[in-house]
Amino acid sequence: MPFLEPLLRHMRIRKVRAYLHRGCNLLDVGCGVEADFLFSIAGRIREGVGIDKKVGAVSRGNIKLYKWQFTDTLPFQDESFDMVTMMAVLEHLEYPESVMVEIHRVLKQGGRLLMTVPTPAAKSILEFLAFRLGIISRDEIADHKKYWEEKDIYSLCQNTGFSIGRYKKFQFGFNSFLLAIKR
Image 1 (cartoon, rainbow, N blue to C red):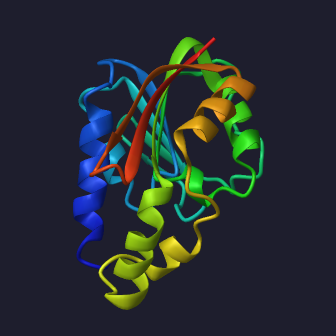
Image 2: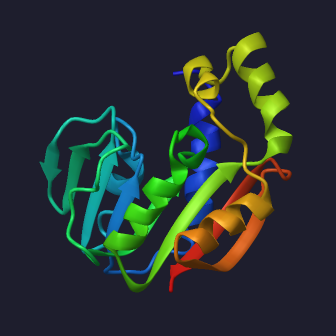
Image 3: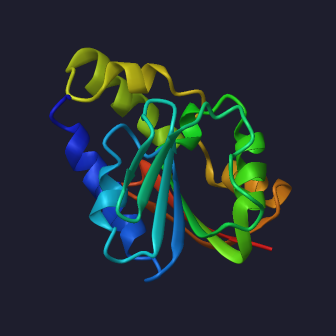
């Protein structure tokens, strides 16, 4: 793993962790192979479920991991989760609106989505770090479909049944944090 990846991930996790509710049922969309975020918060949540196209089926304590292709219906009942996290995932999605509709479906009424996504300002920096210096993942950056502006995030949320509870840029404006609430 390129050496800058863990630092950037740590910064995203720190931003999201501050908004977690103790004892919640949480779904982490795009949890990654190691699902390190879920395992790091296992003591704070009732149940954690991670989904990713690269993960194998795992069940350890109150954490369960499932392989998911991001084009399928989520394999959970309606209103199964209090919170959903999605860190550095939206920019990779071919059909972001479909995924957001599924997240809305599995969230309980009033449930929260905590999300990070790079802004357009990050594009040239991330490409330089990946393709010129090799200190972040080339594959991850090459897979980016879109860098999200604030207005586009608001529109996506509005179109999929969410209201914005908080929006804030961080990492010098190269990343966005969003807290969205199921209406």
